[in-house]
Image 1 (cartoon, rainbow, N blue to C red):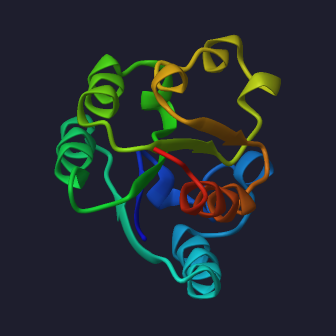
Image 2: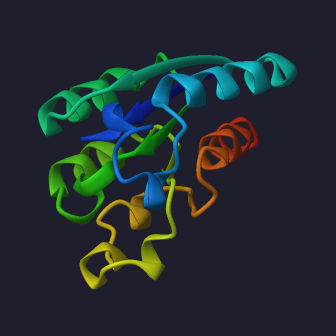
Length: 143
């Protein structure tokens, strides 16, 4: 199975951005963890990061017919983007929403996700392991 990992705004700053919240692990470190686990699962992964909403929408649309699942950490767009929500719903590609932090233990505005209702499931609060758990969930999804 091919799994597309999408990371949204500011995730390129992992390792230095608010380490008390997000830890000191970089996005490259996380990618390495996921690639290692993917080998054991017989999965192929593709990682992409963008600070631009439209780019994330384009990648979600392009996933149809190319990937068996999408794992997305949309960052702040989780709480604001109807466009990303509609792209997920419109493509029909099974999608897992992930977050490094427990958004429900944070600011009130982070408690609402526009994406959750159109995703197969949500994994949050496990730091870098949220990405590994997202891979495992994606590989086990039944569309």
